[in-house]
Image 1 (cartoon, rainbow, N blue to C red):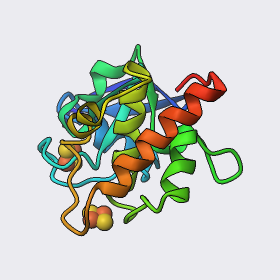
Image 2: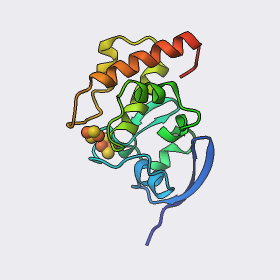
Image 3: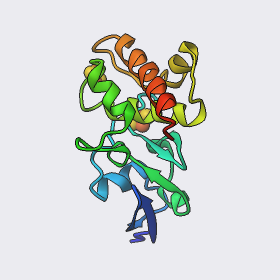
Image 4: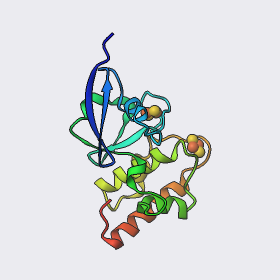
Length: 162
Ligand code: FES
Ligand code: FES
């Protein structure tokens, strides 16, 4: 049986080794490494639950092969901040009531950070487009859009890098 090859992923600033077959997705590899904050949803690029940042760009980890990610910086929602030192977007989600379930929120926050990395002053349309791949059928998106706008203002005022 071919167990693939040993690769090194850089996740949230730490190097982690894992043996992966050629077909193992980044989503599967991250979860095998214990990064269960990266959620497994549709596994076909439809829901956005598995979003991570690769070199500061939001991607669906279920559509990415793990072995292609050896030379990039991977950031999960846990790498953005924590309860003691949250990312401005994480704070905005809490403060503006945008946090939904633990399944969709990580991907929403990662996708929003990816947007602000690219466009620190996004329009409403930019935000809607950036989050269009993150699905939740449970509630509305209004508070989420408000939280992204709020975080953009806070970060701009603070001169913070996303
Ligand atoms: S699990 Fe990757 S987009 Fe749904
Ligand atoms: S999928 Fe998370 S609240 Fe709807």
